[in-house]
Amino acid sequence: MLAYWVPEWPNDAMPLLKFHDAMLNTVAKIIEGETEFMLACFSANMRLAECFMSPIQSSSAGLTTCYQDILGEMHEASVTRMNRVASLSEEFRQQLWEEV
Image (cartoon, rainbow, N blue to C red; front, top):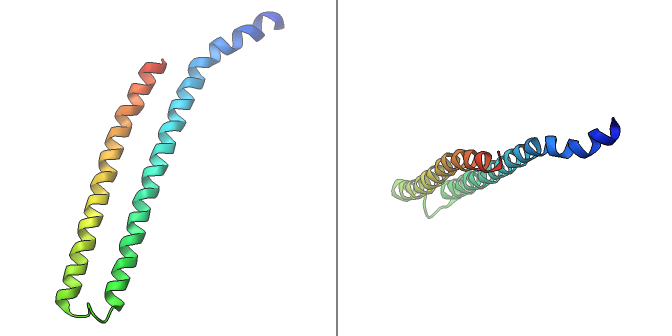
């Protein structure tokens, strides 16, 4: 019985392994995208702190300009994040159909 089962096991497990591989690749891409977004948030927070502590930009006009620049960068980072998330679900479905 063991002589029959051992050669057949990889054939039965291969679709599950391919599914697991596709899922782990997608999770890795999600983690990479979230890390990039968190780095953008960190950078924006650092720049905002610099704007508040800078004597040159202590005026309301200087702070407004700094805040609007940072807000624009965060908007771009958020849009990039949402586009990436939307494309990942499509890529994951495509990988599943290719593997299955």
